[in-house]
Image (tube, rainbow, N blue to C red; front, top):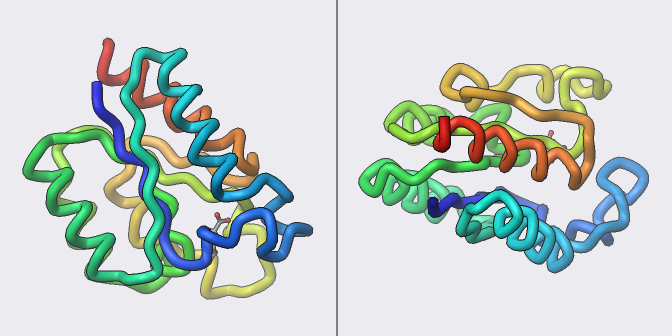
Length: 145
Ligand code: DQA
């Protein structure tokens, strides 16, 4: 089963970006780990990152057309993008929302809302990079079961 792991703005700097919040694992490491976790779960995982909102919407629209499961860390767009909300609403295969940190317990009140959660079959927060593994395990269990 093909699975897309889609990452939004600023996540390309993972490992260098505020490591006290997001950890020291690099984005390249995340890509590699998702690939190998997927292989272990029988999933064909492709991981992407973009700083351009329209590109994410294009990827989500293609995932809707192709009925591909999506693991999504929409980063800051999570909190305010109604274009991402509408794109998530069209998905047919399972959508799992993931965040490295736990936005709901962070001090900025604007992080406490998510446009992705209403469409997500599962939400994984606050587990760092390992949260992506949990998200992929959820997808594997859902598409197999
Ligand atoms: C994030 C949390 C968001 O609030 C933030 O804007 C990000 C990363 C996370 O993975 O913890 O860019 O999605």
